Image 1 (tube, rainbow over the protein chains, first blue to last red):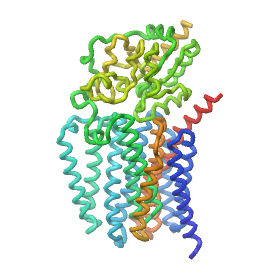
Image 2: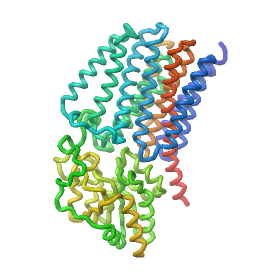
Image 3: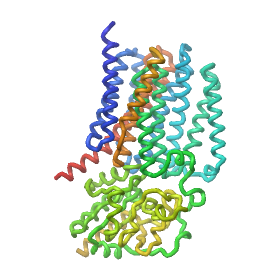
Length: 466
Length: 99
């Protein structure tokens, strides 16, 4: 036995070990960054080990270099250029491409293989096509919804969709059963089309607020697709890595569901939060009575006397790119002796942890970011709360109104504070399309305007007063 | 595949490992972890690479293999870099607070 297969085997084992350590390290704040590097190193090792064992010829090398340059280059560009606010849709896009890769490998084996594929490989091809296509189309739909390119069409909220999806799933099953008999036949295309449609049909009815859970689940699927591709090409390393990511993705999905107080079943099959009655209510002022609006000057006056200020940042803040203005205002207030903190809801932003990333970008000190469970008891002794582009996560109906679609979701209890200012563009509904009872409370005042402009105005008011 | 039996054991143990690896995750890390795990799922590059290596001059296999390699590598490179960008911010903030 030559030394090369043995060396390749050793490299594979090392790669698996490093991947596992990387995945583990990613779940701890302290080690996360080096763990990410470790996982990337493991991936490089795995590639080196594979190339060592496979010994591709010159022609193969040409195609490998070509594919790597295009794919890797685009990935590099995208990762450099993309804004932090667009992170969720970016992850969705990357994930969809991973699914597409598994799908293409399986298709290539089925269509152009040398016909030597045994039953195990054919079944793996079917699984890889099915899961890969769902991952791809589902991720692209998720990306489109997060980008705002796709809405939640009203017809997708009717119960008929379950029937349609079941019919599509049956079509996929028919195709799947026929593929092993005739891998390159029309059954394969039935499977591809039906799986793609199923990914769309299942993802489209899900509301934007639940998208993070969906992306996490699709991420788990792409692990499964990779494991299936491992069976297709006979790579144990691929099987173990795919299975690992698939299982870990499932756990992460569960953790996220818990943070949002949603069950996975209700996310997947329950339709959009808020239901059709509320959807599309953006810009609708009719639902509100006794709203008090005030100017930035009045808000600044309240801030000047406040001893304890809490900011509640939401996605609207990130869209307005107002993190830096917010940081400046909080520095001014701290200079005046006020105690400033930021209340971070677990799902603030578009994805759990998204807001932490955005505020970190603006150099907000880590200690000032306070998680929901810690800050909720503090609200009664808070003088001023400023809600910036957050909506559903501060809705008191989630605690008080059993009829509300949000009921049961843990929220930031800002209604306990002495004074609340809500900075908002208009009276439009929140991301989930639900009316917010906070806006009508006597201690609440609305400051209408772009978050960045309002914050800059507040900064100059506070500065000139001091 | 040397044997189906062996491969299924690998699948089972890999899944169990994945279930155990992530226990408690602070919400701060949900986004980076998802993005990091997503990059790892781009390990399909291995399937694309062996497909190309074993193509023996079969043009459609080479072409499909290269396209799938491109998609997978887009996932891997983009995923790891984006995760690093996010995590770098946490690091910078921490050292800033220490001063």
